[in-house]
Length: 376
Ligand SMILES: Nc1ncnc2c1ncn2[C@@H]1O[C@H](COP(=O)(O)OP(=O)(O)O)[C@@H](O)[C@H]1O
Ligand SMILES: [Mg+2]
Image 1 (tube, protein in one colour):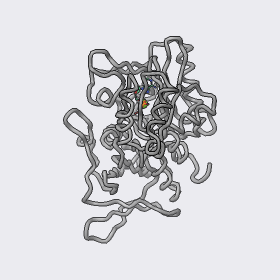
Image 2 (tube, protein in one colour):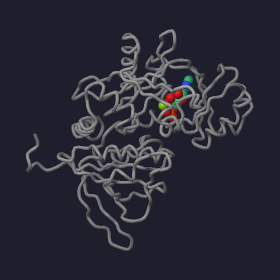
Image 3 (cartoon, rainbow, N blue to C red):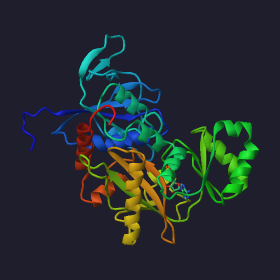
Image 4 (cartoon, protein in one colour):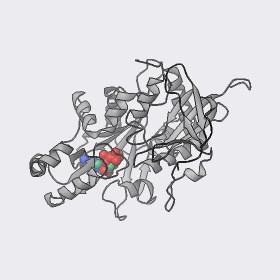
């Protein structure tokens, strides 16, 4: 029980951001603002507009929800917020246009609910590390590696985790030797392949390509999101995911019940694409616990914990696997700031494991407050 006199912990909830997942981040923030334990935490909602400015946002979840016909957005203008930029400071400054910046309050911990580059990729984590400010979730390296589907696979492979075949097309390679890059893909991978921007999320810029004829266009499409592109062999299998939470103290990571993403036939989605994820509620079923044999669920959980440790993750991560018809588990990806609305897979998997959404948010903040700043 928190006594009435106990000071509340000041949490800066940071969302929006410069990536193409801006709206998804707003939706995550809507969920968190509505559910965070207000008896324990004082919330400072900090929006990052698409132009990169940091602004004070009203503490109201409703305008931030994502729905068909409503794409939430943090708009620049109004009161800008300046977070501490050096050690020994916890003061947030507010800056109204034409005024002198004023002290707005202190921050105890930051909850960066950002998806994609400039948020989930170690950049904001680096900024907070510089100022010794505690924050929820993975540190700089784990965030950066987890954002980059190429280096993620390099690390998984080195840790002995099972992954599928892939080829990377860098910007330099594409501009220098496009024909060679295309020939290499055709030689190394079996179709269909998945062409993806290396550093994106929410399925943005991803295409499934059935034959060589569609490859160049798919690469160009992925390049509109990131100039580094990864091409992966298509895996036939069920999509089974696992939520991971850092252990308390020196404890091992905790894994949830596994969940399954079922993309229903007849809705025009050939894989778990952006529309299926966020806009077409009937197209996808999240099933948790997934109806898979216990050994397969255990194997997914083992891979999830190993992936978490291979990257040196902190706080949370969601690990997504494929389970093939032969029962083989392959790791598809790790997400260091997974979708986090109450309906998203990560909180749903914890709910099925006995940890509710509000308690999960509290646990994540407590983990952040407990961990030391600096090298750890
Ligand atoms: N190699 C693959 N084989 C089969 N399906 C894939 C493959 N890669 C991606 N997909 C499909 O595309 C979706 C999005 O790909 P993913 O790598 O998870 O990107 P994101 O980071 O955008 O979520 C997956 O959930 C899955 O449905
Ligand atoms: Mg994914």
